[in-house]
Length: 329
Image: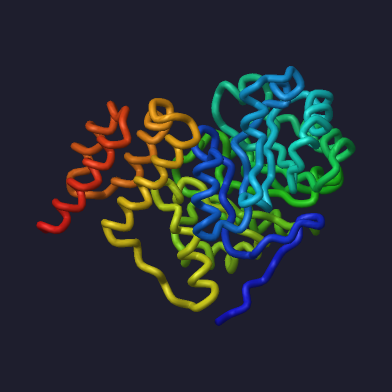
């Protein structure tokens, strides 16, 4: 068995396998817990509004709660004003995050139009001031997640990363796409390599890692210190187990059989129901169910049925039908 290395972000020890990327409206505590059980080495919360934190928004507090089993974990803040970021970082102390991450990569209009997320790639001095305010007010390491740049004409990840390092951040995560790309096209891993070669702090690579072999290739091609998996974990929390197993043994674990896939789907939905109540939990489960059944022969029919899922028992029946049809094939 191979010995898996560790990396350090400040004083936080993280296994050098694969981490779960921050994903708004997806990576809630249930999702994170599942991914952690399958071997995700590091977790990041859904993005939290710095202003919401400062104004005492109840939902913001819920987003910041960390369970013991989720550690090491970061809480990710977004905002465009250093003073709000600094104050929010102070307030996060009561949740004892292992790391505080600053979102400088989110491409969605409601964040970007206010000057936050990947809009900060266009205003480097503001990005550096935000990082400095976070570092000065934090009692744990501060990191930042950036993109390659705003668009193809303004690829500035290296410059941004160097400025963030100077401001005191302890690691930088780089998604190899521009804001203009959103999640389309291919991630440019050469940008991650350039950032790694330009700073002394750890660099986390993100973008188009779907398998254990992809993960190994990103480490090899970019020299990054940690790999982050996001959308490839949708309906596939076992991807982290596949990565860890491959790095330990050199063996490729296959995708789980249909029955196991349905079992994990049902457990995911049950955890949501237990956490949120059945009605709310099943509403949240709908998108996850669609991801779990992706690629199955009758997935279109299942997706249609999932649009109205409101009871856990109905999902149990869907899973039983899927398994039965699979057996007939």
